[in-house]
Length: 202
Image (cartoon, rainbow, N blue to C red; front, top):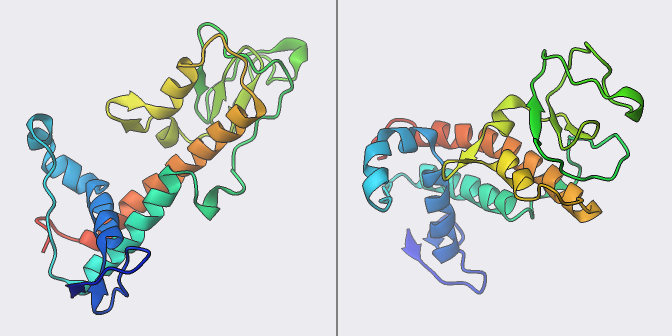
């Protein structure tokens, strides 16, 4: 392959590639769980290094996956058009002190009296993130709630940073898109590992 700059910064991925393709390739590689595990100690003390591949098919696959990851993290992916989570209970949408609280599937949800929550002793079928005693986001998988970037739990930190505030409609929509983006990110990270195959990358 050779580099060929087009207006959109991409090549045709058959005989050429552009800077946007290279960026997407790097983005995919850095989201490989096996890459992060293999080079964990090195990444603690230095900038990540980019392993290159001479395999055209592997390069194309990683460019495609990287592009999908970029679109997700910019919240521009078409996959986010209809988030799978719900925010079903009406209230003031305020993130109260002591929240957010996460309840995984199979756990007993908190009682919420007349405000339309679970009631005492109800076992949850899906994960929920409570922002106050009654209001919650429904359909949040444990692996999404626990997903970390830079040592922070993304879903937890976003709400903690807004503790004491009322979430607007745009805030609620943004958070639901975040959850959907993280869920898809986890899936794509597994696909990146499958595309890479064995390490070191060849």
